[in-house]
Length: 121
Image 1 (cartoon, helix red, strand yellow):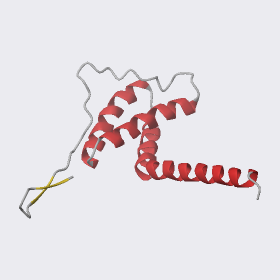
Image 2 (image 1 turned 180 degrees about the vertical axis):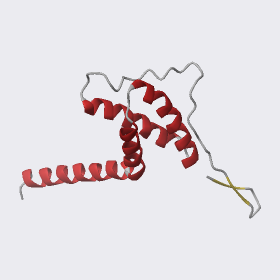
Image 3 (image 1 turned 120 degrees about the vertical axis):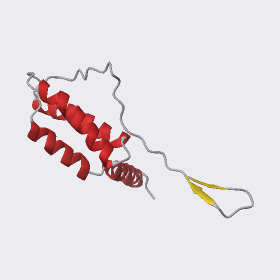
Image 4 (image 1 turned 60 degrees about the horizontal axis):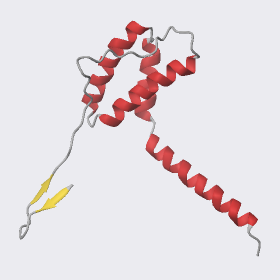
């Protein structure tokens, strides 16, 4: 965000930085990794939590700190270190916003083709 002062060429750039905050009463009651739920459910819980941290934290340092705090809790709930490490790498290397935009464009294109093929000359 840029604010220009009246009758001045001075510019003040403001940036908002955010990071995760866990309340002291937060018990991180997530599903046990050793539960009998399907493995994709366990993976999905971990992925959604790490993706949430990525979206909230504006700096990489804050993201890593939040991930370490999350894993400290999850390892006692049966989540493997390799699953955690692979999921963090996947979330960091994957551009979810661009993928969402591509899906919207493809849906619009499919709708256009469907309407073009049903409407005759």
